[in-house]
Amino acid sequence: MKKLKSLVIISVIILFSSCEKKITDLEFEKNVMTEIFPSLIDSTCIDIRLFTNFPPKYGEPIYDKTGHYIGVDSTKATKEQKQKLLEWKINTEKIKQDTSKIIIAFDPVIEYSSEDLIEYLEKHFKNTKPFVPKEKVYNEYTLDFKNIKLNNRFELRHANQFPKERGKIWETKYNFNFSGAVFFSRIQFDQNKSFGVLNGGFACGRLCGQGFRIYIKKNKNKWIIDHIEETWVS
Image (cartoon, rainbow, N blue to C red; front, side, top):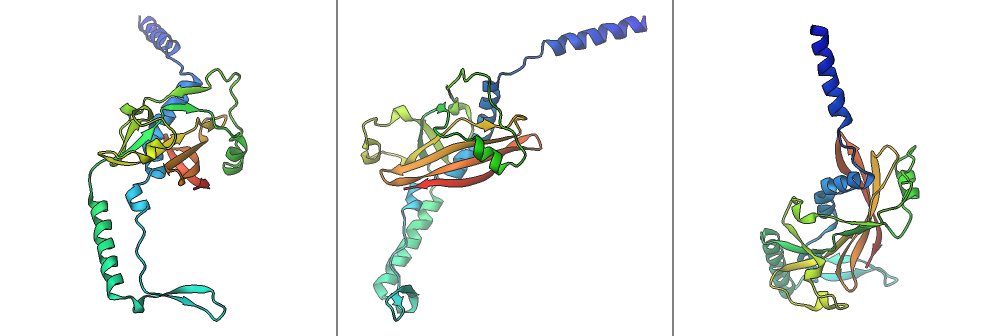
C-alpha cells in the first residue's frame, strides 16, 4: 500500500513537471529587459536642467608665456562674478531639491541593434559564445513599460504623446519637466543566457545626447549592469 501511494505521488510530480510551461526566447528576453529596465533608466537618463546648468565665469584666466591657457586665478574674481556664482549655487540646489517628476519620452518598440553586438559580447565577457536563434522570427517587440516601477523620480511617457514633426519635440514648451527621449535595442545574449549586451541612447536636444553600449550579467539569480561605455556624444 505504501509503495502504491509513493508511486501515485511520484506520478503526480512527473505529471506537473511535464506540464510546466517553457518560456520562449522572446519571453525570456522580455523578462530580463523588464527586470533590468529601472537600472537602465537610472544609468542613461539625465535631468536636463542640471546637465545644461553650467557654472558662471569666476576669476581671471591664466596663460603661459606662449599664450596657452593653463587655468583660472579665482582670487581675482570680481564682486559681480561672486554674486553670479552664489546665485548659480542657489539655483542648482533648488533643482536638486525639486521633487517633481522628470518626464522622459520613450518608444516601447524594441528593435534589433543596427550593428552586430556579438563581437562586443565576446570581447567583454571572455570565453562566452553568443546565442544565435535559429530564426529571427521576432524582429521587434513592445515593452509594457507602464507596469515597470522605476527607482527614482523619472517618469516615462509614450513617445506618441509628443510632437512627431522633426525638431518639434525640442521646441515645444511643456507644463512639466521634460528632459529628453531614451531608447534601447534588443539584447544579445550568450548561449547560457547569463550575459548580455544592448545599445541605448538618450537625446536631450537637436545637438544634445549620448549613446551607450550596456553590458549586463546575471549575478546571484539577478540581472545587473556590469559596465556601460559611451558610443557617441552630441
